[in-house]
Length: 152
Image 1: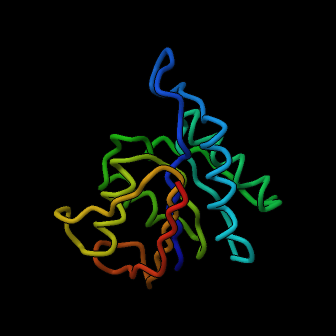
Image 2: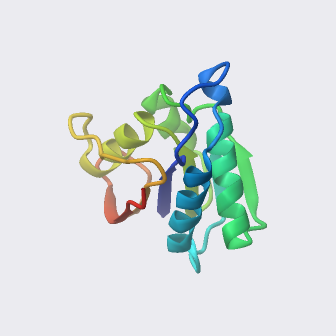
Image 3: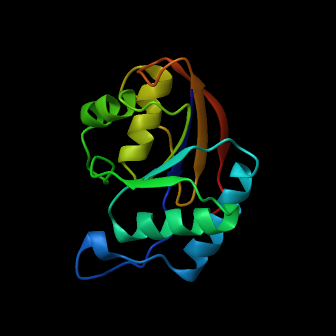
């Protein structure tokens, strides 16, 4: 099983609500650079937070890769989402190669939990950072950090 975690690109500082913040042009550019690390990878599905900046990030990735596969909005991947719920949802997935587009602090906490099996050491992820994890299952402490790409 392979799981890529992508934090959304840089977003505008303010909007009517946090969920409505758009990517900046620099954020879009950084996301396209991160997407280059996904070229040739056997991505099956892109899972994405419902927040606008994450949706725009997923769109940039799909365009950059020419990805025509399944893209699904998941409400359990917002900045303050519950890790236990996210792990249950990820465990139900049948795909072997997933990309999750989401936010801090959620994404750093999720990566830290999957790698270390505890919450004490979250992974630092700047905007448009991409992490590749690999393991037999998506479970705490059972995934190995394969690569980290920071572009911003």
